[in-house]
Amino acid sequence: MQMIASHIVRNLPLFIGLSEQEKDRLIQGGQQRPYANGDYLFRHGDPIHNFYVVCEGAVQLFRETPDGHEMTTDVCLAGDAIGETEILQLSSTHRFNAIAIKDSLLMEFSVAWLKDTIKNHNILALNLLGMLSHRNSVAALEAEHKATMSAAQQLACFLERMCILHDFDPRGFDLPYSKTLIASRLGMENETLSRALSKLRDHGLSVQGNRVSFNDIEKMEAYVCSSCSIAGDCNEHEALRQRLLVNKTKEIRRA
Amino acid sequence: MQMIASHIVRNLPLFIGLSEQEKDRLIQGGQQRPYANGDYLFRHGDPIHNFYVVCEGAVQLFRETPDGHEMTTDVCLAGDAIGETEILQLSSTHRFNAIAIKDSLLMEFSVAWLKDTIKNHNILALNLLGMLSHRNSVAALEAEHKATMSAAQQLACFLERMCILHDFDPRGFDLPYSKTLIASRLGMENETLSRALSKLRDHGLSVQGNRVSFNDIEKMEAYVCSSCSIAGDCNEHEALRQRLLVNKTKEIRRA
DNA sequence: CGACACTTTGAAGACGATCAACGCCGGTGG
DNA sequence: CCACCGGCGTTGATCGTCTTCAAAGTGTCG
Image (cartoon, rainbow over all chains, first blue to last red; front, side):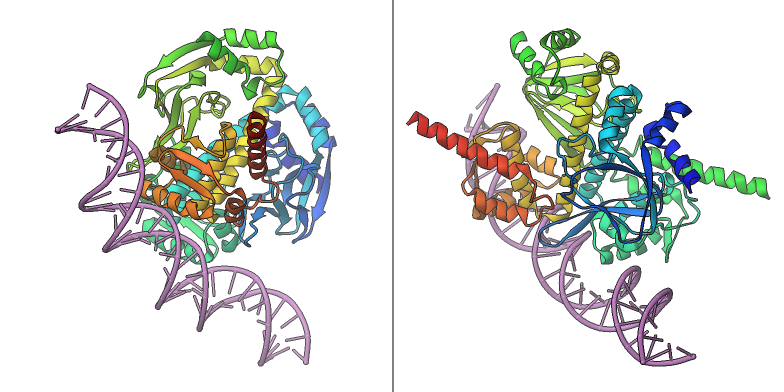
């Protein structure tokens, strides 16, 4: 167990460029802790105490509006960090809820401790800057998509990103969490998601049950890119294509 | 002219906490430059050379999709910085266009130089982190609003923020740029914006021509907050209320 | 004055949300 | 073992909102 966690923490983007000894020291500052399905890590308004890394399981980050709407801002799986965006904010309270949606294992780091560490390790600050910067551009892009893309296009985009980010096989992989959650993540209703999924079958992407397969990437890109401002330098499509290639060569090697 | 620019740069959030001497040194690294209405600072895909600060005028940041849609991500006025989000990204090219929409005066800083400076001035890195972090949370909130709010509610939210950010008088101020631009910034059509504006008259906010006045903040907040997840700890409403108060006391003092 | 950009209004259409009903499964309890 | 239930996903019908298209009003500037 400790092994798994340590391995995951070692490979955090936040820790890139640090020596193994430094990583060791940092990991010493963290604490492992299990959460059962349904346990809250924290709620909106709670004081910020920790920075978290998901080692196993899944955590949903979400907010609620007074009129009862629930909006999930993110779903974190193994290897994802929670709180990067908050630790350096002025506000001392959480701005969203975090709940374990599977039995999960997390690594917790005290924020006070982490802040100090950042002040002394310039490389950490730079890593964090790069991460926030990247996250920003992704957020901007998603906001744009929400304005310019149809539900089906947004969904295709989302599945592509999921496939690459979590290193799934484009020819066929299982959704890591429920469609209800995906709908909420994308800011649409379950019914809309369901209908969007069937539309995508005409555009080279099939989803049956939990199984997703990219059948015709060219066709899908044509469908999605017409509404995407960064179609030109969008590295997702390229990555996807590469991945398909890699898998094909692996197959050939096996044969 | 140099005075104006220097004064604005001195008060950049990025430079908070630096001594005046340090600021002087940093300002030496920058260069002032005028842009005429319609001049591009850079285009999507151009290599990233500079970090900019608007000293006078206005700059529109926007993207275009292959199918002809234009989406403005931001409009920068005096005191705003351009490029904070990009300087620490891996990508070496701009991911959006920037065009002067009035005759403007900008301060330009070489990115290479700025990166070095950040590496050596820990305080700059921390300031930048705070800014990105804050920008992130604003972006997340806006994305959420796009999913949960009507056009009129989003607009009200936007005008509130504008009023506070640029230190306008809530009882009456002029829009700093065109409604077309606002519509584009909010990801809606001109017609939708126009209709949203009339709707807002029933909710305590009147706009006639370029003139905006908050007539009944209570009513407006009630209208907006029902769909806002951070209604509780949203400091915008509070700030607006304070500002109204301040202006009232000023008025009394004058009388 | 006329050209032009910006704004507003009306009418029609598209898209997603909402409401309602049903099928499917996994779990619980009799 | 089966009946029942609840969560999840799908499908159809309807409704509201935003977009689209068309037209006309407003303002500014040469």
